[in-house]
Structures are given as structure tokens and as C-alpha cells.
Image (cartoon, rainbow, N blue to C red):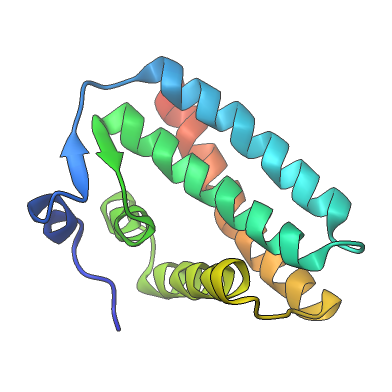
Length: 142
């Protein structure tokens, strides 16, 4: 199923307008960087958790951007849909949504990922992470 528009998630109450929160964004930025570093450090010994941590790092950066724009989301799908507003390509959005589904299957249904599969997934997540990291830093600097 394709992701819906960000406005859909707002209309369903899964995203709320809030006061812009620069302090929250800075905290989420720091946490996201720590998570991604940790993900990379455990990739060989705990691939499942590395994949989950890398995904969470990406979500935290999106949450930081949402905080800077005056939103709070209760939906990872909404977070990913928000990337359209930032000019992310549909291919990037679809790839991140695939990561969301993979993380979900690992975390909630015990799906196993080999070290190689986890490494590939973490590498894909890191691409999104780097792009989002630049965006968050740019917005914080404004």
C-alpha cells in the first residue's frame, strides 16, 4: 500500500500542530547521531538491532524536522510521507517505507535478517540519514 499524503495523517489526528520546538529538535539530532553510531558498532554482532537502531535514527531526524516546522507525529508512515514536503524523490520515500516495514517485521514479528541483509539495510538507511542530517542542521542554523 502506498503512503498517503501528509495532510491525510493530519486530518486523521496522527499529526498535530504544535509550537515550533528548537530545543527538542537539537535533542533529537544528538540522539539520532548517537543511535546511528551505535547501529554501526553492533552491526556485525547484532544485525537485527543494528537495523532497528538505524531506522530509529532516521525517524528521530524526521521528528526533529517536524518539531522545527511545528508538528508532532504519532505515525512513522506520516513521518515518511512528510519527506515529500522536503523534496525527497518518490524512490527515496518508497525505499524508506520499505525499511519501515522491514523494521516492523523484525521488531514485532521476529523476522530474522542475516548480517548481509542487515548491512545492506543499514547502508540504505544511512543514505537517508545523511540527507536528513544536512536538512536538520540547515534548519537549526536558520
